[in-house]
Image (tube, rainbow, N blue to C red; front, side, top):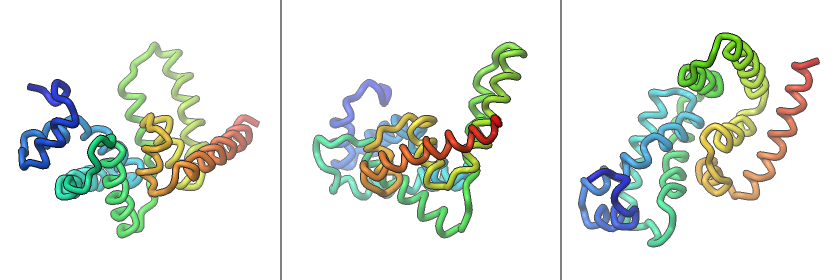
Amino acid sequence: MSARDVDEAELISRSRAGDRDAYGMLVARHQEVAFRCAHVVCGDAAEAQDAAQEGFLKAYGSLHRFRDGAPFRPWLLTIVGNEARNRRRSAGRRAHLVTRVGAQLAERHAPGADVAVLARARRATLVAGLDALSPDHREVLVLRYMLDLSEQECAGVLGCRPGTVKSRHARALERLRVVLEGVDA
């Protein structure tokens, strides 16, 4: 039986009872978004992998504190985001994730040569604009648009309130617009 075939609440219940296979299914279901979330915060693939793995371990140890009926993904991403932030802080690194994500997206899509050249130029402009933003602004835009997380999920990852995400998101878009207008001029 695959991880997608079992109800998430059932997997959580079984995991709490000590069923490691059930928790393995939860991990399989959420490992990609957990890694991408950690990658946004860390900016380094190896650190992100470690942060996601450590986040899963911490979540497993904290399942007894998980509120029944609550969505699992935001809870997990909060733990993973905190772990990734701790790793970034302790390492003292600044992430250049946007460049890496842009390259990964470019590798996934192989359009015609003329479309590829135009897309590459647009992507380079966007990446330059995102790189010019503060880390807080860059993170919120990457989480919302590249990882397609909700405001609530972003709040968990960033360790702030949804209202802060909303205002930071608005300021980030405005700042990106100003930066991109300067690039086009």
